[in-house]
Length: 386
Image (cartoon, rainbow, N blue to C red):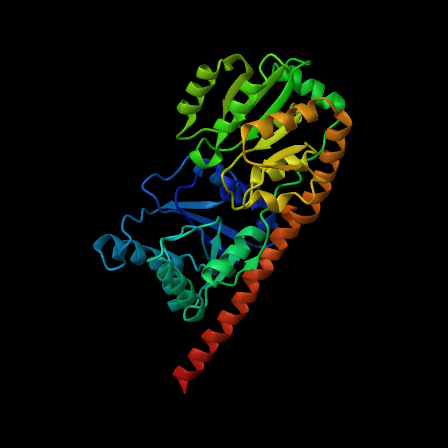
């Protein structure tokens, strides 16, 4: 089976990391993976795909109008690519490229559209978005996939759009529990003081990630706790966040580490994972932290609340720095609580978000549509012969 993923930029981000991690398992199951970047910039994760044997191609889509010169050029390129490479499944991740489903239908190719997050429309554009989903689903046989319960429910209630829920996954070969000896060694390796209480967040620097609140919470605890905040990620608001740390007088308590491939090392060396997003489709970096049996503190927002049940495997809190600071203090003084929450978190993600289980579900989703498409093609050929 050959699958082409249509991305915007191919960046160091949730979906790209997931499919990079699962590339070997997909290949083991007989899937050859292709990835097309359709933004002006190819992205900063392309080499990571290539290292895993994912075939990559860059074809920018510079127009939202299908019948424009740029639109026709892109879709003609896509048509030829799908045909020449004998693609079986077109898996669309970009949100404004729905006409690709028409191309797939013409060629008798299975098409899937993944909904990665929660989207809202203006009142006047909502009917258009509802109609667009319905048209590609009914007339062009596109099936929708949602990455978690919040996205699945939102698509159904807000857009009247049924979708298959297949949870995002983490790679259990890369993220797993630790021993005290391993933690001590990693702290030494990363130059982290043994007596520091280490907070970590992992995610791009963007307004939606709301790292400002983490910095404000740490400022509340200055002089009260010996805290070190490890901030993994880069992005548009990085300079703004660094300036805020200076303004709050907590520079010495924060390490901006950028993007890292050895994320587990930093997680293991930490005491608590925090995520203060304004909303999420599903917090992939939180899955990885939980898989490492790290206790978590999450803002009680759409997407993140999918990951906590009755506070038994972490804390969901009201979105504000004071609540965050209070929970950091609670965890800091109670190692037994950290151990309990971390162990429950590990059980939860292994049950609901393991890569092997959910890739198998995705493969079954691909094949279900392939069988249907093959029957449609046979019917068309029979009618033509008759």
